[in-house]
Amino acid sequence: MTRIVISSDHVGLGLRKAVAAHLQARGCVVEDVGPTSDARTDYPKWGEAAARIVRDGGADFGIVICGTGFGISLAANKLKGIRCVVCSEPYTARLSRQHNNANMLAFGARVVGEDLALMIVDAFLDAAFEGGRHANRVAMIGDIEAREGGG
Image (cartoon, rainbow, N blue to C red):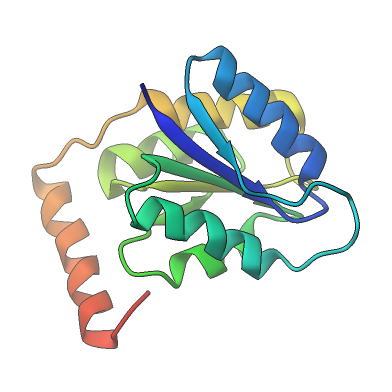
């Protein structure tokens, strides 16, 4: 059973709840570590919280949501071993798994609607890492991360 951690800032709260319900309907185990109210909050702490769980093996994948998806992905990507992709369409979501072995997905609640968000999630989760030449490239990214001392 796929384990997914999900988080957001205040802007992504409603979409996060819809995505979490969709994931549960798919049979995923969902850990929601986001805020419980729509009071303003800062996306970096929520991106980091979800990324730590993925990095530490508590979830297979993470999904993070803010206004654009970009800010929260930046926070998640600061952790070593995290490859968080920002997507606004399913094609990039699928290829990020197949070619880059992405382990986290981000999108913007102000960019994509609920139906599109669910298509993005499905494309991401239904794809698998292809390995081969792509594994060499993912390893190169890891080497850069190691030389720089983190994410």
